[in-house]
Structures are given as structure tokens and as C-alpha cells.
Length: 159
Image 1 (cartoon, helix red, strand yellow):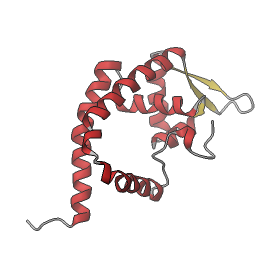
Image 2 (cartoon, helix red, strand yellow):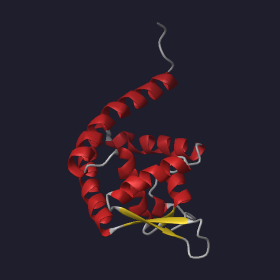
Image 3 (cartoon, rainbow, N blue to C red):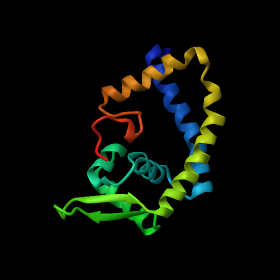
């Protein structure tokens, strides 16, 4: 089999390494907070937004379809972690906010998840590589029209 180009080797290494590590990180989220990755990302997006988000805004942040977001939010609502409300002006608009239980759980989950990343991923990043490594995902996210920054750090994002 011919050798991969450097670009394909980078792509494959990132995908496979990320997938392998993600399986361990997901296990910690499940064990510590009984959350799936999707549930964690939804709760984290709501926390980072600093308040309620419209359903369409949450879908955009999660890169999910509206149907997938609706299903995800319904599961979180069943657990008492979020609440959905209708817009005052337009009843078709749905706003989603964390409950007190949701805030408590995302804080606990984020502490465990961050500690896990710090233990497993951070040692792989050498000081002299940090700036270059940070530039690549930022370029990728920008090219795809998404962000790697928290919702509250993105200018013009709805609150």
C-alpha cells in the first residue's frame, strides 16, 4: 500500500486519535454525570451562552438538525435539566434554559471532563507546538463556518 500524503496522515491520525480518546472521555461523562456527549454539549452550550437560547441557535451551536435537537432537548427536559418556554411575541419560538439541576450537573460534569482532558490530552501538547496546533483547528472551524470558542465568546451570537 502506498504511503499516505502528510495531509492524509494528519487527517487520519487526528480522526483515529480523537475517536480513541473520545471513547474514554465519554465513559467518564457517563460514569460521573450519566450524560452522553450530545447531552453534555447541549448543557455546556446553554451554560456558556449565559441564559436561554432559541432552539435554532442551540441547533446551530451543536451542528444538529432541528429534529435531533428537539429530541435531545426532550430527553434533557425529562430529566429536569432544561426547561422549554414559548416566546412572548411569537409562540412558535422555543427558548431553552438550564434549570438549577441542569446548572449543578453541567458544573459537575465539566469539572470531571476538564480533569480528564487535562490528564489525557494536555500532556501530548508540547509548549513549542501549542501555537501551531491551536491555529489549525481555528482555521478548520472558520472554513466550516463554525467556532471552537464558547458561545459567550463569539461576537454577535444571540444570548
